[in-house]
Length: 274
Length: 314
Ligand SMILES: Cc1ncc(C[n+]2csc(CCOP(=O)(O)OP(=O)(O)O)c2C)c(N)n1
Ligand SMILES: [Mg+2]
Image 1 (tube, rainbow over the protein chains, first blue to last red):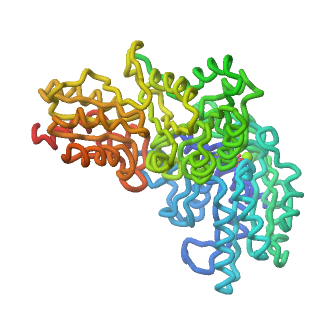
Image 2 (cartoon, helix red, strand yellow; image 1 turned 45 degrees about the vertical axis):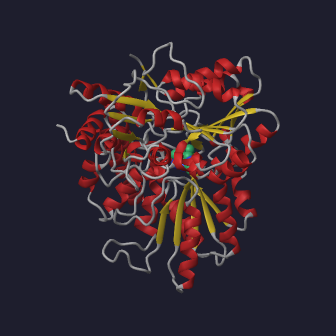
C-alpha cells in the first residue's frame, strides 16, 4: 500500500505544477481527494483504457467536479490521456482540458461541475446495471460541502429504497468548503448518523491512507443490498503543510516559492514512506 | 477612468443603505467571497445569512423572509441561481410576487475555462420569461450603484446579472438612470447609419467600436439596455427607425436574450433586419472571457469588423 500512497504523493506534484503553470485550479480539494482516486483507479475499480468503454466496467463519477486536475493526473497515469497534452492544454485557449470533468475526454463518464448531481447519476447507473444483470459497481465521490445540496439526500433516499448494494459513495470529509469550515457554514454532523438513518451502510476511515480506503471499499462490496458510503476523513491540502486544513487554499494558485515548498514537502513525505 | 467590479459597488451601496434600512438582509450560498459580500457579513452579521451550497433553499428562504416583510438580497453564481433554483424563482418569487432581489454574480462566461456548468448564458431568457420579474444587466459601477436604490424602492422580484471582472466606468458622475428606460452612453445621432444595442459588459465594447467606426466615417448610436424587463421599446424604435442597420451585442445565447427582445420590438413597430452578435447556441470555446469575446466578435474590434462587413465598407 506504500506503493499507492507514494503514487498519490507523486501525482500531487503533477497537479501542483499544472495549477501553477495554468494559473487556475482547485488545489486544496485535489490534494485531499488524491488517495481516494488512486485507490479506486489502481486497486478497486475494473476500468481499463484498452477495453474502454467495456459495458461491464465499473462506473465512476467525480461529483466534486472542481477537483478535475487530480482526475487528469490519475487518468494520465492509467494511460487514458497523455499528461503532456494535459500540461500544455489545461487552461489554454480552445483546449478540451477545462476546469471540470468533460466526457469528451477518454475515461470520463459524465460532465460534472454543478455540485449535487453525481449521487443521483450514480443511482441511475446502478439501476441500469441491475437491469442488465451487471456485476459492475458504481462509485461516486462527493465533497462534504456538496452535501449541503438537497439533491444529494433525494438520491440517498432513492438508493436505499431501491436497495442499491452495487452503489458506493465516498465523501471527501475534509471539513472545509469555500467560505470556511463545513460545521460553521452549514452543520453536517453527526454525518454518519444521517446516512445510517437514510438506510445506508456507513463506513469511516482515514481518507488519506490507501490501505484504510482499500479495506473500506472491500467491506462496502460485501454489504449485500444496502448502498455504502465511506466517510473518508481527509485533510484539505494534504501533503503540503503550508496548505493543510486552510480554507484559503480552496482555489488559490501557488506562486513560484509556494510551489517549491509544496514540492519539497511532498518529497519529504515520500522519503518517509520508503 | 477606473475599473471596478459591479458586485463590489453593489456591496458598498447595500452596506451604506442597510444602516438606515433594518429590513435589508443578505443571503449567500457558500458564495460570499465570489459575490464580494464578505464586507456585509462583517458589518451586519445578524442580517447576513449563510445557507451552504443550496441554491434552491436560498431562494425559498428569501421568499419566506420577503413574505414576512424583509428585503432579501440573494447573492449566488448566476449559473446556479437561474438554473438550479429556477422553479423556486418561478413559484416563490415571481408567481407569489415577492420582494426578492436575486443578484447573479459571475454571470455570462465570467468563469471562463471552468466550462459550461459554470456559465450563465441563458439566464436572461429564463428570467425574462417569468411574470413580475424585473431583469437588469448593469454596464458600469455608477449604473450598478443607482440600481440598488431602485431595487429597494421597487417591491417586486428582480434579477440582476453582474460579471466577475472589473469593468471600466462608462458614465460620468452626472448620469441619471431612470428605472425601465434605456440610456445612450454617447450622444446619439439623429440620423445614424447604425444603431448598436447592447447591455452589461458588452456596452463598453460597443462604445469603443462606435468610436472607432466614427473615425472611418460611420455614424453609430449606442443604446445601453441595462433594463431588459420591462423593456424600453420606445428607445429601441426611436433609434432604429431611421438607422440603416440595427445590431445587437450580448453575452448570451442567440435565443431569448437582447437580440430576440429587440427583434420582437422592431418587427411589430418598424420592421427591418436585426443583426445579432451573441455567444453560440451551446458551450463556448474554452478560454478566459476576453478570449471568448474575441472569438465570437464580441470585443470592440469584432463588433466594428462585423458592422463594416454588414454595411459593405472596409
Ligand atoms: C451547484 C453548485 N453551487 C456552487 C458551486 C461552487 N463551488 C465550487 S466548489 C465549492 C465548495 C465545495 O466544497 P466541498 O464539496 O467540501 O469540496 P472540497 O472541500 O472537496 O473542495 C463551491 C461552493 C458549484 N460548483 N456548484
Ligand atoms: Mg470539503
